Image (cartoon, rainbow, N blue to C red):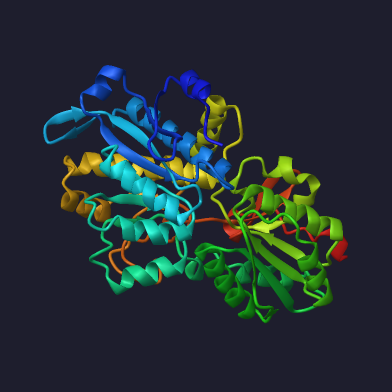
Length: 434
């Protein structure tokens, strides 16, 4: 759920209530008189209500923290065409729905006067919104829709989509690459699968299907026979029939991605209750901060490479600042990357452009090379082995690009296992596999 009015007030935030959706849409940090002096309106997209509402709340908190710290660092107000202007954030609620997201962004631009967009969640939303924004004259920085289908569309007509800066790498070159670490665990004798069969379960979205295809390919490349992936709605809560099917098929690894927190946690708990003799990949499980609260010991031994992790001291310091501000552990991907890093990137783009001219903003966004807290952000000029389309964030090693290590979850913690240069321990075989 989005933050309450009292929560905004406690953070010293100005709250404006919204338009067609009737939810909180705007939060500004400037004094009211500064807002009256034509603050730049930045739309922040996220699923602030609906099945992924906790993810949306994390995006909000990260964005607010970025604005506060940008002001402390002297990055705000920005100088645009010779005028000092502050920022006002407009929450653009996608509600995890492509149709509702399109209405929300249209309303934000045409009625609320939004002049730039930042962030977002769900590939299906990105597919719809990226097209809807054509001709609106706004730049959209760092939407988290990751599906390769977005890049396929951009590559067909890159000029029309030059406003779109894709904030998540496509699964075929990044998110689905579980094969190499699993092969390493097998080579080292750390994991001995009882069969070379795998199952994949994904949410019914463009992201889910794209990730399912990429994971299947990665597993097939190391010798697994992968069943056709199963597709479930974001709000599904009963998985016993699917788990029974996987048992009957004698699978030794199950890959799962569902971005609804209740659905994902229910799958993890039911998997553990059924004692399915398989390793589980829980991609996206840690995208909501209360993942361990909802799953308990059922999440022990899960492996995932869905988020950035604390490696450098400055990342640990960021986590501490976040905890002091919000009194909770951050979910790093939505709060740290989508909310904080991309808001900071947008602020740097504004400062570098010195203007709200569309072409100037596009040019500066293409040139940006920003070392964020959780990733280095630079967008591709053209498709390559680091990005599948123009405008997609480029992958790289730690502090070189978009980067997530593989971790194993245990007792609510995530220990890095891969790549080996950042490893904090070795893979532990789930006891039900011994």
